[in-house]
Length: 314
Image 1: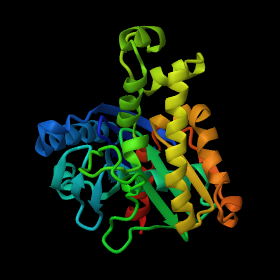
Image 2: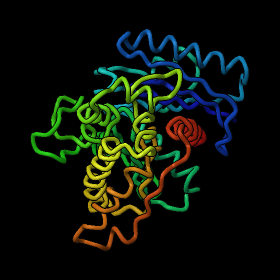
Image 3: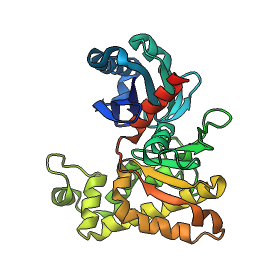
């Protein structure tokens, strides 16, 4: 039996086909283009699933769908997604009708947490906090070996923890959120404040063929010794440490897993993050917890596929 995993991000949507052991058999991705609306997006998603069904037929038994934002997992509805700019959008039900496959839907960070639980930690640690560091910041929790939803299914909105009163504006409409300091859009905004000649900076440190200021460009600059780039990453680590410290104090997880594009800059932000964690006055939970960076860039889509299979087998 095979499952399809779908990870809907603010920038890209990723699809994978995996077996129960998490082995990748096929994958696809496309630009989310959320501004064109949910109906247009669903049509493209169904077409991608249809392509997989032609290749794998009845072996495909489920879809797991992870979406950025506040998700109602029972109804399969995005209640509000700041980075998609969608409100009250039903996805799971319409996708089931279009594809004929049962669809389990969760917040994308919940799916990444499940992927970390199954693939990175092999279910050996039952209390896990996972943070997805991408366009925005999400988090998912496995507590006692089960995905934790909270009273309304909204648990895990760590990106919108307020870490600075009246701080930088966030895509959610608020200010001072963790995401407004550590999401990739905010990291790049801060870089622009410190870089004097952006065009020359991109030419020197950017990826050939993709000449734009992004986190890869900023990481290349830090590796080359650029003071401004290193300052941005150190600030990112400091604020990330503030957010994670609060979460560790509340949840006392055995492991914190970081994933997503921003996590690739670990060398440049981890020292500042760890400094904040080491400075906490209540030491016990910080002595026990392990910080892990997942090397699986598609943990959300893998986790979604495995979660869909898990639900389908019950």
